Length: 432
Image (cartoon, rainbow, N blue to C red; front, top):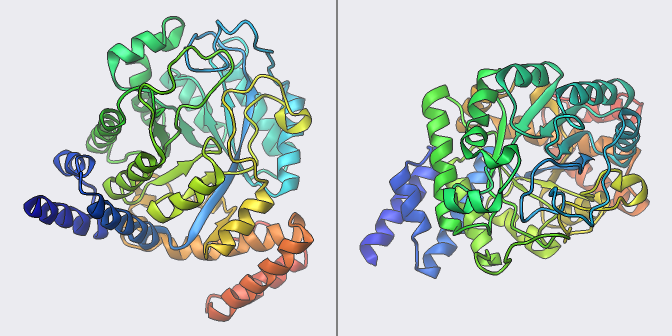
Protein backbone atom coordinates (compact mmCIF):
# COMPACT_ATOMS: atom_id res chain seq x y z
CA UNK A 1 0.00 0.00 0.00
CA UNK A 2 2.81 2.41 0.87
CA UNK A 3 4.51 1.74 -2.49
CA UNK A 4 1.21 2.33 -4.32
CA UNK A 5 0.68 5.61 -2.47
CA UNK A 6 4.15 6.82 -3.44
CA UNK A 7 3.29 6.17 -7.09
CA UNK A 8 -0.01 8.05 -6.73
CA UNK A 9 1.80 10.99 -5.16
CA UNK A 10 4.17 11.05 -8.15
CA UNK A 11 1.15 11.14 -10.48
CA UNK A 12 -0.37 13.99 -8.50
CA UNK A 13 2.89 15.93 -8.74
CA UNK A 14 2.84 15.46 -12.53
CA UNK A 15 -0.72 16.81 -12.69
CA UNK A 16 0.27 19.81 -10.56
CA UNK A 17 2.88 20.50 -13.22
CA UNK A 18 -0.10 20.60 -15.65
CA UNK A 19 1.06 17.62 -17.69
CA UNK A 20 -1.41 15.29 -19.42
CA UNK A 21 -1.42 11.86 -17.77
CA UNK A 22 -0.79 8.63 -19.67
CA UNK A 23 -3.08 5.61 -19.55
CA UNK A 24 -1.17 3.64 -16.86
CA UNK A 25 -1.29 6.73 -14.63
CA UNK A 26 -5.01 7.18 -15.27
CA UNK A 27 -5.59 3.51 -14.49
CA UNK A 28 -3.67 3.84 -11.23
CA UNK A 29 -5.85 6.76 -10.15
CA UNK A 30 -9.03 4.85 -10.99
CA UNK A 31 -7.76 1.94 -8.91
CA UNK A 32 -7.05 3.91 -5.72
CA UNK A 33 -8.71 2.06 -2.82
CA UNK A 34 -7.29 4.04 0.08
CA UNK A 35 -10.03 6.55 0.98
CA UNK A 36 -7.47 8.71 2.76
CA UNK A 37 -5.51 8.98 -0.47
CA UNK A 38 -8.66 10.15 -2.26
CA UNK A 39 -8.70 13.20 0.00
CA UNK A 40 -5.26 14.08 -1.37
CA UNK A 41 -6.45 13.40 -4.92
CA UNK A 42 -9.40 15.76 -4.42
CA UNK A 43 -7.20 18.48 -2.97
CA UNK A 44 -4.74 18.19 -5.84
CA UNK A 45 -7.56 18.37 -8.39
CA UNK A 46 -8.76 21.60 -6.79
CA UNK A 47 -5.24 23.05 -6.90
CA UNK A 48 -4.84 22.07 -10.57
CA UNK A 49 -8.14 23.72 -11.47
CA UNK A 50 -7.08 26.92 -9.68
CA UNK A 51 -3.65 26.92 -11.36
CA UNK A 52 -5.36 26.81 -14.75
CA UNK A 53 -8.50 28.91 -14.22
CA UNK A 54 -8.20 30.56 -10.84
CA UNK A 55 -11.45 30.89 -8.90
CA UNK A 56 -13.74 31.40 -11.90
CA UNK A 57 -16.72 29.15 -12.69
CA UNK A 58 -18.38 29.48 -16.10
CA UNK A 59 -22.18 29.62 -16.31
CA UNK A 60 -24.43 28.79 -19.27
CA UNK A 61 -27.88 27.46 -20.13
CA UNK A 62 -29.04 24.73 -22.51
CA UNK A 63 -31.68 25.61 -25.10
CA UNK A 64 -33.56 22.52 -26.28
CA UNK A 65 -34.69 22.87 -29.87
CA UNK A 66 -36.41 19.55 -30.53
CA UNK A 67 -37.47 16.33 -28.81
CA UNK A 68 -38.59 14.62 -32.01
CA UNK A 69 -36.18 11.72 -32.38
CA UNK A 70 -35.50 8.94 -34.86
CA UNK A 71 -33.54 6.89 -32.30
CA UNK A 72 -34.83 4.61 -29.57
CA UNK A 73 -32.22 5.03 -26.81
CA UNK A 74 -33.75 3.07 -23.95
CA UNK A 75 -32.72 5.54 -21.23
CA UNK A 76 -34.01 8.76 -22.84
CA UNK A 77 -37.35 10.52 -22.53
CA UNK A 78 -37.06 11.64 -26.15
CA UNK A 79 -36.75 8.11 -27.56
CA UNK A 80 -38.90 7.20 -30.54
CA UNK A 81 -40.59 4.37 -28.66
CA UNK A 82 -41.88 6.63 -25.89
CA UNK A 83 -45.52 6.85 -27.00
CA UNK A 84 -46.40 9.12 -24.05
CA UNK A 85 -43.97 11.84 -25.13
CA UNK A 86 -45.40 15.18 -26.23
CA UNK A 87 -43.31 16.12 -29.27
CA UNK A 88 -42.13 19.62 -30.12
CA UNK A 89 -39.62 21.22 -32.48
CA UNK A 90 -39.10 24.96 -32.14
CA UNK A 91 -39.61 27.20 -35.12
CA UNK A 92 -36.85 29.71 -35.77
CA UNK A 93 -38.97 32.45 -34.18
CA UNK A 94 -39.62 30.30 -31.10
CA UNK A 95 -35.90 29.57 -30.72
CA UNK A 96 -35.19 33.29 -30.90
CA UNK A 97 -37.91 33.96 -28.32
CA UNK A 98 -36.34 31.55 -25.85
CA UNK A 99 -32.81 32.81 -26.53
CA UNK A 100 -33.95 36.41 -26.02
CA UNK A 101 -35.56 35.49 -22.70
CA UNK A 102 -32.35 33.78 -21.53
CA UNK A 103 -30.30 36.78 -22.63
CA UNK A 104 -32.57 39.05 -20.59
CA UNK A 105 -31.92 36.81 -17.58
CA UNK A 106 -28.19 37.40 -18.02
CA UNK A 107 -26.92 34.46 -20.06
CA UNK A 108 -24.51 35.22 -22.89
CA UNK A 109 -23.64 31.65 -23.92
CA UNK A 110 -26.14 28.93 -24.76
CA UNK A 111 -25.84 25.26 -25.61
CA UNK A 112 -28.28 24.35 -28.39
CA UNK A 113 -29.54 20.79 -27.91
CA UNK A 114 -31.55 18.76 -30.39
CA UNK A 115 -32.61 15.16 -30.67
CA UNK A 116 -31.55 13.22 -33.77
CA UNK A 117 -33.97 13.78 -36.64
CA UNK A 118 -32.64 14.69 -40.08
CA UNK A 119 -35.87 16.34 -41.20
CA UNK A 120 -36.69 18.21 -37.98
CA UNK A 121 -33.15 19.10 -36.87
CA UNK A 122 -30.82 18.84 -39.85
CA UNK A 123 -27.99 21.19 -40.79
CA UNK A 124 -30.28 23.61 -42.68
CA UNK A 125 -32.42 24.01 -39.55
CA UNK A 126 -29.38 24.64 -37.34
CA UNK A 127 -27.98 27.23 -39.73
CA UNK A 128 -31.27 29.15 -39.73
CA UNK A 129 -31.65 29.03 -35.95
CA UNK A 130 -28.04 30.03 -35.26
CA UNK A 131 -28.14 32.92 -37.72
CA UNK A 132 -31.38 34.24 -36.26
CA UNK A 133 -30.25 34.04 -32.62
CA UNK A 134 -27.01 35.88 -33.37
CA UNK A 135 -28.79 38.58 -35.37
CA UNK A 136 -31.86 39.06 -33.19
CA UNK A 137 -30.62 38.59 -29.60
CA UNK A 138 -27.71 39.60 -27.38
CA UNK A 139 -26.41 36.04 -27.09
CA UNK A 140 -22.68 36.15 -27.88
CA UNK A 141 -21.71 32.52 -28.35
CA UNK A 142 -23.63 29.36 -29.19
CA UNK A 143 -22.44 25.81 -28.70
CA UNK A 144 -24.21 22.77 -30.15
CA UNK A 145 -25.01 19.30 -28.85
CA UNK A 146 -26.41 17.46 -31.85
CA UNK A 147 -26.23 14.25 -33.83
CA UNK A 148 -22.95 13.21 -35.49
CA UNK A 149 -22.65 14.65 -38.98
CA UNK A 150 -20.59 14.36 -42.13
CA UNK A 151 -17.43 16.43 -42.53
CA UNK A 152 -19.21 18.78 -44.93
CA UNK A 153 -22.11 19.27 -42.51
CA UNK A 154 -19.64 19.96 -39.71
CA UNK A 155 -17.94 22.57 -41.91
CA UNK A 156 -21.26 24.33 -42.37
CA UNK A 157 -21.96 24.17 -38.63
CA UNK A 158 -18.55 25.63 -37.84
CA UNK A 159 -19.00 28.39 -40.45
CA UNK A 160 -22.30 29.37 -38.81
CA UNK A 161 -20.39 30.64 -35.77
CA UNK A 162 -20.55 27.72 -33.34
CA UNK A 163 -17.93 27.64 -30.58
CA UNK A 164 -17.96 24.06 -29.23
CA UNK A 165 -19.42 20.98 -30.89
CA UNK A 166 -20.49 18.51 -28.23
CA UNK A 167 -21.40 14.84 -28.59
CA UNK A 168 -21.27 12.01 -26.05
CA UNK A 169 -20.48 8.39 -26.85
CA UNK A 170 -22.86 7.49 -23.97
CA UNK A 171 -20.94 4.26 -23.21
CA UNK A 172 -17.83 2.76 -24.77
CA UNK A 173 -18.84 -0.78 -23.79
CA UNK A 174 -19.96 -2.13 -27.16
CA UNK A 175 -22.40 -4.87 -25.97
CA UNK A 176 -24.12 -2.38 -23.66
CA UNK A 177 -24.15 0.26 -26.38
CA UNK A 178 -25.82 -2.10 -28.84
CA UNK A 179 -28.46 -3.13 -26.30
CA UNK A 180 -29.25 0.44 -25.30
CA UNK A 181 -29.46 1.77 -28.88
CA UNK A 182 -31.48 -0.85 -30.78
CA UNK A 183 -32.66 1.26 -33.73
CA UNK A 184 -31.93 4.50 -35.55
CA UNK A 185 -28.70 6.04 -36.80
CA UNK A 186 -27.35 6.06 -33.26
CA UNK A 187 -27.31 2.26 -33.30
CA UNK A 188 -24.12 2.56 -35.39
CA UNK A 189 -21.40 2.63 -32.72
CA UNK A 190 -18.56 3.31 -35.15
CA UNK A 191 -20.34 6.25 -36.82
CA UNK A 192 -20.80 7.91 -33.45
CA UNK A 193 -17.24 7.08 -32.35
CA UNK A 194 -15.87 8.87 -35.42
CA UNK A 195 -17.89 12.06 -34.86
CA UNK A 196 -15.02 13.92 -33.17
CA UNK A 197 -12.56 13.02 -35.93
CA UNK A 198 -14.94 14.40 -38.54
CA UNK A 199 -15.63 17.54 -36.49
CA UNK A 200 -11.90 18.25 -36.06
CA UNK A 201 -11.25 17.57 -39.76
CA UNK A 202 -14.02 20.10 -40.54
CA UNK A 203 -12.29 22.80 -38.52
CA UNK A 204 -13.63 22.50 -34.97
CA UNK A 205 -10.80 23.20 -32.53
CA UNK A 206 -13.12 23.03 -29.53
CA UNK A 207 -15.06 19.82 -28.96
CA UNK A 208 -17.02 18.56 -25.97
CA UNK A 209 -17.00 14.91 -24.98
CA UNK A 210 -18.49 12.72 -22.27
CA UNK A 211 -20.25 9.51 -21.28
CA UNK A 212 -23.60 8.99 -19.61
CA UNK A 213 -22.43 7.63 -16.27
CA UNK A 214 -24.53 4.70 -15.10
CA UNK A 215 -25.00 2.87 -18.39
CA UNK A 216 -22.01 0.63 -17.64
CA UNK A 217 -19.22 0.34 -15.05
CA UNK A 218 -17.96 3.91 -14.58
CA UNK A 219 -14.28 2.97 -14.30
CA UNK A 220 -14.44 1.29 -17.70
CA UNK A 221 -16.18 4.21 -19.36
CA UNK A 222 -13.97 6.87 -17.76
CA UNK A 223 -10.82 5.02 -18.84
CA UNK A 224 -12.21 4.50 -22.35
CA UNK A 225 -13.21 8.16 -22.70
CA UNK A 226 -9.77 9.36 -21.63
CA UNK A 227 -8.19 6.86 -24.03
CA UNK A 228 -10.33 8.37 -26.80
CA UNK A 229 -9.15 11.85 -25.76
CA UNK A 230 -5.50 10.80 -25.85
CA UNK A 231 -5.94 9.31 -29.32
CA UNK A 232 -7.32 12.62 -30.59
CA UNK A 233 -4.44 14.52 -28.97
CA UNK A 234 -1.94 12.15 -30.57
CA UNK A 235 -3.54 12.39 -34.02
CA UNK A 236 -4.56 16.06 -34.20
CA UNK A 237 -2.56 17.78 -31.47
CA UNK A 238 -5.74 18.73 -29.60
CA UNK A 239 -8.26 17.00 -27.42
CA UNK A 240 -11.55 18.00 -25.84
CA UNK A 241 -12.23 21.56 -24.74
CA UNK A 242 -14.79 20.21 -22.27
CA UNK A 243 -15.62 16.93 -20.57
CA UNK A 244 -19.12 16.48 -19.16
CA UNK A 245 -20.06 14.15 -16.31
CA UNK A 246 -23.83 13.52 -16.60
CA UNK A 247 -25.23 10.71 -14.46
CA UNK A 248 -28.16 8.58 -15.59
CA UNK A 249 -31.37 10.09 -14.20
CA UNK A 250 -35.04 9.05 -14.29
CA UNK A 251 -36.88 9.91 -17.50
CA UNK A 252 -40.46 9.28 -18.53
CA UNK A 253 -40.54 6.27 -20.82
CA UNK A 254 -37.09 5.02 -19.78
CA UNK A 255 -36.53 1.25 -19.96
CA UNK A 256 -33.24 0.87 -18.08
CA UNK A 257 -32.36 -0.27 -14.58
CA UNK A 258 -31.14 2.85 -12.77
CA UNK A 259 -29.47 0.84 -10.01
CA UNK A 260 -27.40 -1.73 -11.93
CA UNK A 261 -24.46 0.57 -12.64
CA UNK A 262 -25.43 3.38 -10.29
CA UNK A 263 -22.73 6.02 -9.75
CA UNK A 264 -22.74 7.28 -6.16
CA UNK A 265 -22.12 10.88 -5.15
CA UNK A 266 -18.68 9.90 -3.88
CA UNK A 267 -17.91 8.14 -7.16
CA UNK A 268 -18.89 11.28 -9.09
CA UNK A 269 -16.44 13.32 -7.01
CA UNK A 270 -13.74 10.80 -7.95
CA UNK A 271 -14.62 10.99 -11.64
CA UNK A 272 -14.45 14.79 -11.69
CA UNK A 273 -11.07 14.69 -9.93
CA UNK A 274 -9.65 12.08 -12.33
CA UNK A 275 -10.76 14.11 -15.36
CA UNK A 276 -9.18 17.24 -13.89
CA UNK A 277 -5.89 15.48 -13.18
CA UNK A 278 -5.75 13.54 -16.46
CA UNK A 279 -6.38 16.62 -18.65
CA UNK A 280 -5.53 19.65 -16.45
CA UNK A 281 -6.64 22.29 -18.97
CA UNK A 282 -10.05 20.83 -19.81
CA UNK A 283 -13.35 22.44 -18.81
CA UNK A 284 -15.33 20.02 -16.63
CA UNK A 285 -19.08 20.54 -16.95
CA UNK A 286 -21.69 19.71 -14.29
CA UNK A 287 -25.33 19.85 -15.39
CA UNK A 288 -28.50 20.44 -13.39
CA UNK A 289 -29.03 16.67 -13.36
CA UNK A 290 -27.14 16.82 -10.07
CA UNK A 291 -28.59 18.14 -6.79
CA UNK A 292 -27.54 21.60 -5.66
CA UNK A 293 -25.52 20.51 -2.64
CA UNK A 294 -23.48 18.00 -4.64
CA UNK A 295 -22.81 20.49 -7.43
CA UNK A 296 -21.48 22.93 -4.85
CA UNK A 297 -19.13 20.22 -3.53
CA UNK A 298 -17.81 19.35 -6.99
CA UNK A 299 -16.20 22.79 -7.32
CA UNK A 300 -13.65 21.60 -4.78
CA UNK A 301 -12.72 18.53 -6.83
CA UNK A 302 -12.11 20.22 -10.18
CA UNK A 303 -15.41 21.27 -11.80
CA UNK A 304 -15.16 24.52 -13.77
CA UNK A 305 -18.42 24.95 -15.74
CA UNK A 306 -22.08 24.57 -14.77
CA UNK A 307 -25.49 25.10 -16.29
CA UNK A 308 -28.03 26.99 -14.20
CA UNK A 309 -31.78 27.50 -14.28
CA UNK A 310 -32.04 24.79 -16.94
CA UNK A 311 -35.08 23.45 -18.75
CA UNK A 312 -34.69 20.21 -20.73
CA UNK A 313 -37.74 20.41 -22.98
CA UNK A 314 -38.34 22.50 -26.11
CA UNK A 315 -40.00 25.82 -25.22
CA UNK A 316 -39.47 24.97 -21.56
CA UNK A 317 -38.36 28.48 -20.60
CA UNK A 318 -41.41 30.16 -22.13
CA UNK A 319 -44.19 27.88 -20.89
CA UNK A 320 -42.50 25.11 -18.87
CA UNK A 321 -42.50 22.70 -21.82
CA UNK A 322 -43.80 19.14 -21.94
CA UNK A 323 -41.65 16.02 -22.28
CA UNK A 324 -38.20 16.48 -20.71
CA UNK A 325 -35.06 14.60 -21.69
CA UNK A 326 -34.35 13.88 -18.01
CA UNK A 327 -35.36 15.12 -14.58
CA UNK A 328 -33.65 18.28 -13.33
CA UNK A 329 -32.44 18.11 -9.71
CA UNK A 330 -30.91 21.56 -9.18
CA UNK A 331 -33.78 23.97 -9.79
CA UNK A 332 -31.99 27.13 -8.60
CA UNK A 333 -32.17 30.19 -10.82
CA UNK A 334 -29.09 31.82 -12.32
CA UNK A 335 -29.36 34.53 -9.66
CA UNK A 336 -29.37 31.95 -6.87
CA UNK A 337 -26.43 30.01 -8.31
CA UNK A 338 -24.37 33.18 -8.72
CA UNK A 339 -25.10 34.13 -5.11
CA UNK A 340 -23.98 30.67 -3.91
CA UNK A 341 -20.77 30.77 -5.94
CA UNK A 342 -19.90 34.11 -4.37
CA UNK A 343 -20.46 32.78 -0.86
CA UNK A 344 -18.06 29.92 -1.70
CA UNK A 345 -15.36 32.43 -2.59
CA UNK A 346 -15.63 31.67 -6.31
CA UNK A 347 -16.03 34.10 -9.23
CA UNK A 348 -19.08 33.44 -11.44
CA UNK A 349 -18.32 34.03 -15.12
CA UNK A 350 -20.66 34.74 -18.03
CA UNK A 351 -17.68 35.49 -20.27
CA UNK A 352 -17.57 34.46 -23.94
CA UNK A 353 -14.33 36.18 -24.95
CA UNK A 354 -12.02 33.27 -25.77
CA UNK A 355 -14.15 31.94 -28.62
CA UNK A 356 -14.17 35.34 -30.32
CA UNK A 357 -10.55 36.27 -29.61
CA UNK A 358 -8.97 33.14 -31.06
CA UNK A 359 -8.08 31.57 -27.72
CA UNK A 360 -9.20 28.11 -28.76
CA UNK A 361 -7.80 24.68 -29.55
CA UNK A 362 -4.04 24.46 -29.20
CA UNK A 363 -3.70 28.14 -28.35
CA UNK A 364 -6.08 27.74 -25.42
CA UNK A 365 -4.25 24.65 -24.19
CA UNK A 366 -0.85 26.35 -24.41
CA UNK A 367 -2.08 29.34 -22.41
CA UNK A 368 -3.64 27.03 -19.83
CA UNK A 369 -0.52 24.94 -19.40
CA UNK A 370 1.58 28.09 -19.00
CA UNK A 371 -0.83 29.28 -16.29
CA UNK A 372 -1.63 32.35 -18.38
CA UNK A 373 -5.31 31.58 -18.96
CA UNK A 374 -6.43 32.39 -15.42
CA UNK A 375 -5.41 36.04 -15.85
CA UNK A 376 -7.79 36.35 -18.81
CA UNK A 377 -10.45 34.32 -16.99
CA UNK A 378 -10.37 36.39 -13.81
CA UNK A 379 -10.63 39.83 -15.41
CA UNK A 380 -13.20 38.78 -17.99
CA UNK A 381 -15.28 37.02 -15.34
CA UNK A 382 -15.41 40.22 -13.29
CA UNK A 383 -16.37 42.31 -16.32
CA UNK A 384 -19.16 39.88 -17.23
CA UNK A 385 -20.30 39.89 -13.61
CA UNK A 386 -20.49 43.68 -13.68
CA UNK A 387 -22.73 43.47 -16.74
CA UNK A 388 -24.96 40.97 -14.98
CA UNK A 389 -25.12 43.22 -11.93
CA UNK A 390 -26.20 46.20 -14.05
CA UNK A 391 -28.71 44.39 -16.26
CA UNK A 392 -30.16 41.29 -14.63
CA UNK A 393 -29.30 40.76 -10.96
CA UNK A 394 -31.90 40.97 -8.19
CA UNK A 395 -31.60 43.95 -5.84
CA UNK A 396 -30.31 41.73 -3.05
CA UNK A 397 -27.60 40.25 -5.25
CA UNK A 398 -26.61 43.64 -6.68
CA UNK A 399 -25.57 44.81 -3.24
CA UNK A 400 -23.52 41.67 -2.66
CA UNK A 401 -21.85 41.82 -6.08
CA UNK A 402 -21.05 45.49 -5.61
CA UNK A 403 -18.97 44.68 -2.53
CA UNK A 404 -17.13 41.85 -4.30
CA UNK A 405 -16.34 43.94 -7.38
CA UNK A 406 -15.15 46.86 -5.27
CA UNK A 407 -12.71 44.56 -3.50
CA UNK A 408 -11.47 43.04 -6.76
CA UNK A 409 -11.01 46.46 -8.37
CA UNK A 410 -8.75 47.47 -5.48
CA UNK A 411 -6.46 44.52 -6.30
CA UNK A 412 -6.31 45.10 -10.07
CA UNK A 413 -3.66 47.04 -11.97
CA UNK A 414 -5.13 46.37 -15.39
CA UNK A 415 -7.46 49.35 -15.74
CA UNK A 416 -10.36 47.33 -14.36
CA UNK A 417 -11.91 50.35 -12.64
CA UNK A 418 -12.11 52.30 -15.92
CA UNK A 419 -13.66 49.34 -17.71
CA UNK A 420 -16.27 49.01 -14.96
CA UNK A 421 -17.18 52.69 -15.35
CA UNK A 422 -17.72 52.16 -19.08
CA UNK A 423 -20.13 49.36 -18.30
CA UNK A 424 -21.99 51.65 -15.88
CA UNK A 425 -22.36 54.13 -18.76
CA UNK A 426 -23.95 51.50 -20.98
CA UNK A 427 -20.96 50.01 -22.82
CA UNK A 428 -21.26 46.23 -23.21
CA UNK A 429 -19.12 43.26 -24.19
CA UNK A 430 -15.92 44.72 -22.73
CA UNK A 431 -13.35 41.97 -22.49
CA UNK A 432 -9.67 41.18 -22.74
